[in-house]
Image (cartoon, rainbow over all chains, first blue to last red; front, side, top):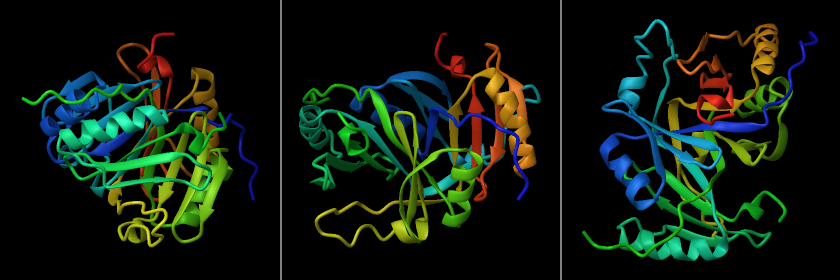
Length: 143
Length: 143
């Protein structure tokens, strides 16, 4: 097998993407209900939110499958359909508060359990049907 | 509009997901070529990698659309098809090294440009066709 030129493994996820069929509904959900700061919106194409050191990208795949029409910013085509997944990190107390807020907002918790290592996860749906989770970071990272 | 119970906005993306049709090809790409540390693998269902403070989840959607069969860990159904998107963060020098490595690995760079703020992005495809980007974090975060 050919030895590849070296490059350092990426140390961060800078952007994570979900696909939605209704950008206005997504913007309301992630902005008003989830409380995230909106970073950028291009009507009928995408809306982006800031989540700590990661940008959450929400795209309408009907548009992004065509790629960019700007020759100076030739972003390649992408776009998925179906139910994606994303998990936010939060403390155990914060997760309890989220259960109440999501229930009142009409996005009730669909699953709520502790993993074998004791970390709690809750799951709910965004307006597009994506499976969204909030979990204690110790699910994956030691305290 | 009803006033919702308060909960603090999530401060991190703990997990980001992509969907792939061939888990072994994905594991080879993200492990051997991208150099990420494999965290967990369930054959024929998923393989997870550690990327700084985020876990990258790669799922076979043909399996995950059925949800979990374990009543103690009732992970809800999810699963998407089409070309997803994820962006890793790296420095400008590291991005240059990635261009050479990806070309040699048979995953050539599909787009390579500077955004209006001067941050560089490159785009390439994983074996499933997902659009993967490596960008300078100053695309979204001031140095």
